[in-house]
Image (cartoon, rainbow, N blue to C red):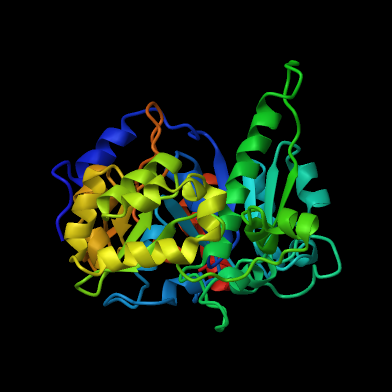
Length: 421
């Protein structure tokens, strides 16, 4: 599997030479699986120091999710936990909770995605930790938020996708609603969490109004279902205004025409978005239907939506006569947005992915090299970087504890008591 001529290692080295936007920001990650750790990953890619707390012995369950390498570790872990330090700490024990309090004195951000009330049970609720560090920012990710009638329900991303309105829209009309295919609810929550952290850092370090001094820390409450719901575009306005309940529409884009996936001669599909007025006319000329392009009833989107089945049939007839690559060449030549539907193999060998640095190399614990996603977004002055590989469980426990002032004897005693791993 080849990368771009500018290899990932060289690119990472060049990125590391740039200023890092979040250098000096210290993040304590106490979440596991996807949403909280994804937020911490993004912060770490732009220079934040991320210390990840994991339970001794087992670690984050993500270490065992999906496909595992020869050492029994998930290859997903290589992407999700890069640029992090791992500290194995049993948070159920009071001495471990004391260590967290000591760590938080020098942290800027705490990320957690436990069920609401868990931190409070450990004596690590906001009232306690904000006294320890008034400038601390606490990102809390949960299924339903920190309050409301559903707060105590267990919440996973797939459930949030259903409650947020997304699952109802996925699939073919009249069929069982389907999953998007990735943990999109968790990732959307992580993205919203990062936005909240950056806003809170801005407030803390430059209070609104331009006054001197520093603003205080604050709590960021991200509910998985709300992160999904915020992406639902016109779903609620259309229901409020017209009583319209949007339904699943398969591969088409309801209300915007023509946009669909069309089967080509070789059985593959071309995604064609011919929905701009001038784009539509070019598309109709290309497929040999200038009559449709000149029809005044089809000049604008609302008219095309009313006759979308007729348009899809015309485009489908044209695409069915040509193999996918010929269809795409013709569409690109005419300036019509189109593309094939990529799978992992398509992505791995695509030259544009490679040229943009979106395919990087990482090393698994057993020494195997694996390709992982690059850093998004791209910043011209302070780009993100992949500085360290995903850690082994507890790899940095001693290092972090020594940095807190603990002696070798104290660390050994904690290990003997099963408080650290």
